Image 1 (cartoon, protein in one colour):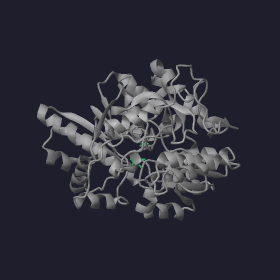
Image 2 (cartoon, helix red, strand yellow):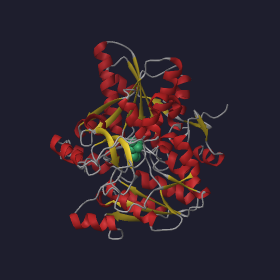
Image 3 (cartoon, helix red, strand yellow):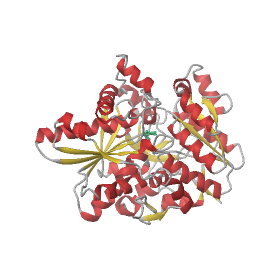
Image 4 (cartoon, protein in one colour):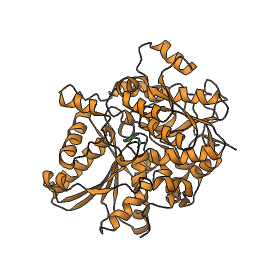
Length: 461
Ligand SMILES: *Cc1c(COP(=O)(O)O)cnc(C)c1O
């Protein structure tokens, strides 16, 4: 039997002819937009990935070398949550794709390996990045070690203090981990000047990594979510799930994923979106976000920066504003202020839906899932579980069958302090307030309708 691990990534741009401009050329600084503090800084991505992010080809071949690494843990399991179904007395069938079986505990390794491979090919010697909860930093550290690259990770200070084991994981793979904001970059120093006691944010950590890369030869910034090529690499998830469900003669009525910037959601959903278009099915796609960072349900579709200080090029996306600092919920991976350009364009076109939940209902769902299915979900993934449970309950109320598929994007075994917080009754809900959102949207850069001229990443030869 041939492996169900795909040989190609699926490129959703091939099915989005109508939203081409929105999804494909959205990454540019509008001609009349403000210049960043240092106009010379642009991220450099290898030409291969740059082409991937603009391509209209439906399928893009996975390099043999990368696929061989995938085969060390893929395919990941697709399971039916029968005990959860029984508890909910639902006629729905609930399936989940479990990405927590990856060596670093989440889906992020799918793109980290591909990126490290392409950067190595392009002659890069060091990769740097920002990480929030530490999942992305862990994945990139491992991928960098596999391809013999140095790795420097700017880790949001609160996580650096609260999640020491994530730091140790990165250091075991030879990465240098710097708590952010640091005094080593001007973005870090500026943040410390504003607030010496700041716990940091992903937006600041990314600005530091950006500056780190710009100041060094053969050192590039690698980004773990949001970019078109990242979403592309994650489509191994959905393609496997499609085949795994096919073997059971099933097809989902609803596909669900938690959204940080959108990579695990897209990775699972896009291949099913392709099938929906190809076969005319009625499948729905639901992106789940925290009420503490509701970029899709409460944000606006606008040009904005990807980092706090505005050194990165702008992206057209659903955003809460680049100066938005999400309340400190435990799902650190969902605290990013914007959604991926592709996810944003599809949401704008009503091709996908979104829902936001408060933290305690999410942990309630995570705990229920752990009791019934014996897997401890990452707090991020528990958002998808919450939505899946609610869909299943609705199916019961409406008295009809339904096939639900969600992405269990990672395990939560390094997030037990969050569950401790929940169990001890100390957890609160921390929604973003209307005032906070309005204040941060007021600081969006001036909007212009000028046609985008280029993609964010400048290809490096
Ligand atoms: C990073 C992360 C997320 C959110 O990021 P996306 O790019 O939106 O997928 C969700 N779940 C886990 C386990 C993560 O590590």
